[in-house]
Length: 121
Image (cartoon, rainbow, N blue to C red):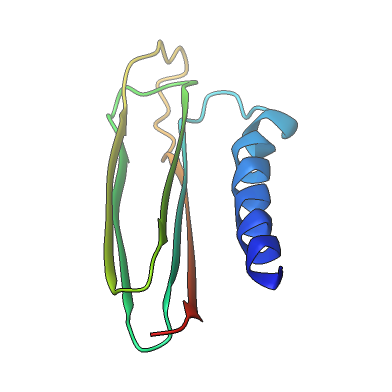
């Protein structure tokens, strides 16, 4: 029962994270990259979960008033070991900057890794 609640909690956090950008006020003139990566490994007690996330976020020099949000979820349930690898690339460009002032993009990268050695051998 505790295992199901833990898994449900992880998914609830993931779902709420997806709505966070919609609940905050938009920043004008700034380019914003948002990323939430969730990895859940529920595996045997004598096994391992290797969880890796590689993310890159960038914006071109002409980027103005743009926003991007990416979410990803990986779930493993089993008695053996698991390797979870998540790769993400975000690049924003475009817009019409009437001020000519370059503002650095805001990059939000959230990585959630849940590793639960729960199953017997």
